[in-house]
Length: 413
Image (cartoon, rainbow, N blue to C red; front, side, top):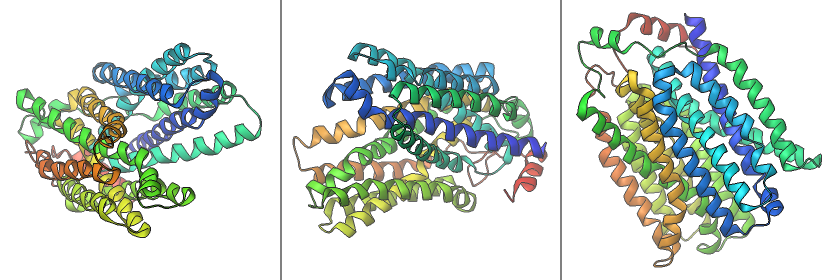
């Protein structure tokens, strides 16, 4: 049992890396595809919304499907579909065919995203201690793999479709091999209820409402992430007056802090609890983005982006984990609600800040991000709501002896 649980955890890491690699492969090929199709940046922006729409729909379909068929079926299916459709944008020859390709690819991405997060919740439940943030950290590793592979394909003179097809084929093989180690089914919710003497936290009308509160918090946090992704470098160049080469490090600082924070977050959740990570992480992010807004010096802006990324790093994994643990029998559906609304925030973040710049200066527009972080910190108490039968770290504490044995066996990993 202990060996199979470790294998399931490794397989989950593999799928997060795979997802980051496949999505990153599309990202690194965007300039070449934009040139091939002959579209403007504005048109490309609209087509990226189509990709996001497809992902959102895929998430909503995959959530209930995962609960019905099991993660061992849906996760590898999502990985295979992502790999099989990755090359489609590379074949597009006009905006309409590119829109269709991105819609299909987005649907498959949404399916893999929700199902692998639902499986991560099941693995975390079986371990009996927080492991979710570590999974999210490995997504960034996939981006690095995609960048290196993209650079190699470009130097070899491969066209986008060929490079994406090759990576997609590798992705399909990886998804099929890793599927053998996935957990066969979700933890038994009924057993957990009987042992704990309580109903699942997500059961009933109040539990569903709690999941939607988690989803709104995810929207706010991921809106902040999306804004940082697209506006950090522009802020340093246009507001602070840094050179273009220096400004590029603004996003790098934010992304590096996010990755480091997620690698460390599980240990802090174990010690201080998920509520503390969400509350004080959001508060730290508020301090960081306020420093970015007010600071006139480059080094202080870098410090602000680092605090912003470090503070936000542990927030989304705690929200996903809480949604999945709210009701183990509906983990997929609950994660799809939180992930779906969060994804809307990620897409909306750059646009919202852009609209605000028509009214106020860019650094003043960042005040919205401060307010969202403060609101998240205040609303972090939702992680405590309905938490009877839960450990202080926010994980399920049904009192299962087998979970405790797994925790002891896996403690050194």
